Image (tube, rainbow, N blue to C red; front, side, top):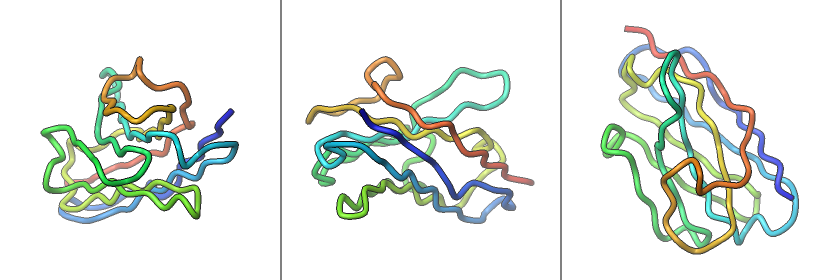
Length: 124
């Protein structure tokens, strides 16, 4: 079992930065792939970024490429999402997700564990 708790959300002006953290508890965190998703009001939850269990392979949604960076520190059982040059359309609740396995995962159905989410609001 894996429990995930996100933090670091908040209100920021367009062009600003935030760093989200996702702390994991439970066994075998280091062998789990991690993902970030987001859900804006009235929209479906969508993929943002993924990192494999080693931390040497990542992939991103086209809408955040070049602005967001996912990373992980297995010693701290934490995964991060550095968000730069934020835009109003990035406003959403951001969720951390996890699953065992060494592949690349970008769909909601592929993840087994979810956090409660953290709100990110970008003002224009």
